[in-house]
Length: 397
Image 1 (tube, helix red, strand yellow):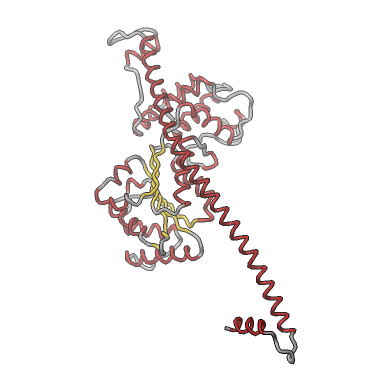
Image 2: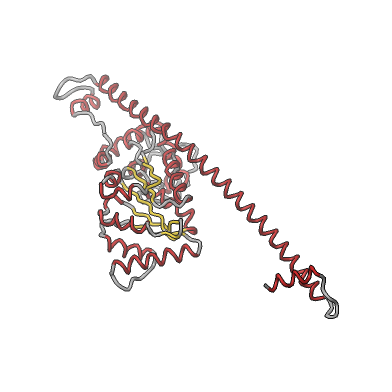
């Protein structure tokens, strides 16, 4: 509708997960590093949690788009399953048709598939989205699958993805053994308020926006950060509607007033924020009237200036808390990045050593071929030397 008007090649704020639009904020980059670390070190279980709309699915799709050739991947999105239904769904994802619904037969088929992939040098990965909805029986079945090993190597890696309730679910006493096997866990938090503008600019750039004038004013981005609380899905919803409003008004920029009008016209946005556990500060009716009309219709008399200052202080405190949280995670990011860098260097050293050994092996093969040729050229009446006899005898043995 509005793409041509704003000079866009496609809609920049679609709600469906699209790895092409992934913006690696500090928290998303750290989450990506945790996932990469888990896959690199072949850990059995990895857990990724986060509020609704924080970008968990987009992050995973981006990760596996990069490494899908190295893994045989099964992604489960429907988690209202019992143990047998879960096994059947896994076989379907791995393109295996089971001959029966026998639980033992299903597990055996999965084991054979894991072993086949392992023998080929590939690895199997199971991703369970919305894992907080799994039954205790299904969790136990996943734990049993993680027991399938070849020597000291795990045959399958399992990534549990879910809302914060997943952490509460894993605290159940019957899941203690599974929880102890989770080597990597990261909780994905919303964007910090100062990153919301960068997130919006990134998606507009991917969508092809090249005009010199910013499409969103600075005041609009500030309002957007405050109202969305840094939830990417809510940001997308507000921005998409705001561009529609601006297009309808034939306005070249999205202003703070447009953002506020979109939020005021869509009460479900506030409901989604509350559902994500984020407190939404809404002035009481009397204060709202005072702020809007400069007076109070009913209820206690509240100064509009005082109410505005109080709300400003609350928002400033929230921004400060989020910045501190981001800084706290920065240390862990540095540690993981150093670990990954060391691992990459070690892999490069192994690769160089392997290439050197291969070159030496080819030289030895060439020398042996030359010696064999010389041995055949020794005449039948000429007695080979002692060294040739030893070489020939060793070769035959």
